[in-house]
Length: 194
Image 1 (cartoon, rainbow, N blue to C red):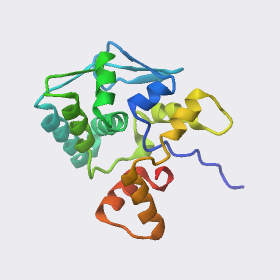
Image 2 (cartoon, one colour):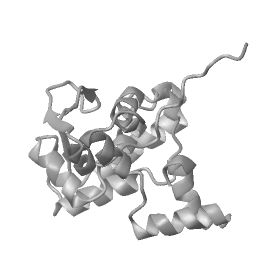
Image 3 (cartoon, rainbow, N blue to C red):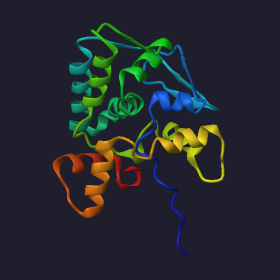
Image 4 (cartoon, rainbow, N blue to C red):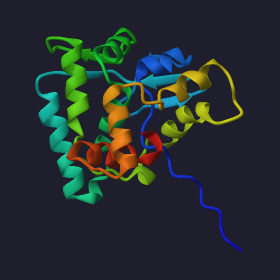
């Protein structure tokens, strides 16, 4: 008898703004590490992370260390990919800042968005062993068929490529053409999301 394997965790989640539109609230929580993110019943609780001019170098160092020495785990890589998923534009940064989750000393919210969007380019990640996998599953559970509500519509709509660049990439992938950009997006997102 074939064994049923549980589905792998999703490789991305909607942005902070899309999640807020879906009814998910963001709240700052006190914790010993900014890596201690929780999600339960529509409430995403995240410790404050301070973003400074040193954050990019520091996070890249930890990501490189985790890839060099697997005994270190992959918590920083997972957290950075999680934040890259949550943050797409300055509006996402503004929401997380207003919630007390992000504090930064950079010139603008846009700079923080760019930092997180570029931090994990080209980074490989084991989705199956991610410490945030349950959060990815919990947030994406809202988009399961049969649970029609405002949250479902908002979360599932994020996977419809309305961005012209993503539509172009999707068309290229389906035609079999693979530019470096389409390969990068396909490797990061998988075929299910574009």
